[in-house]
Image (cartoon, rainbow, N blue to C red):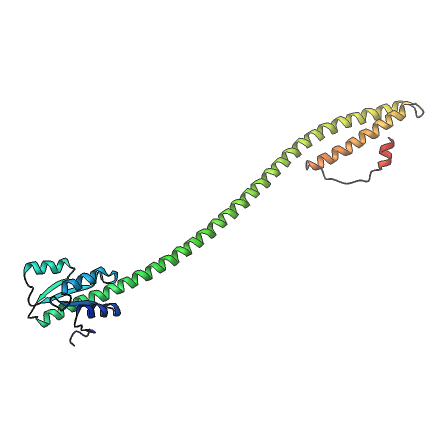
Length: 238
């Protein structure tokens, strides 16, 4: 035919509705006067079905042509109301418009489905990227906190080293004064003087104190630590 469309014919309302359920229909042409069920009743059945709430319906009638009939047709969901005799070119033009509108609507629906799918995929990708970013931020935050903790510990050690170095330096000065005095006393007394033993013991104790201050100064990063062997038994005897 000149429409280049697939046309289906039905001899009754029930047969027409059965064809609707089995096929994808773009436009329905309904004769108002039909056996069993009239065109208005068929239109009501079509509109009640979820699949056909937007299907284009065109009423064709040679009898029910009053204004009330037309109003009733539009109330039942008709897109148009065509009188008989039908002008073929005009009817074909109307059918062509509704068929093209049906195809465009289906294409739009398919595009919407594809768009929703792509949006869902993109949303999932963004959610994954956001989760990865949050994980990296958490890792960097943990690294920063660990670095700050290390810096804090180094600052504490540095402060402790400065305090220790100051105390060791002052203590070392006192020991040097004591050792100097003990040496002067040792020179003034004779070798057999009983106090020499006490002076020697005090000198050794002061020297051990000086060795301890060297270790403290080394801890304070003021002197290089040079380990030396110590006779523990001698220390106990002294």
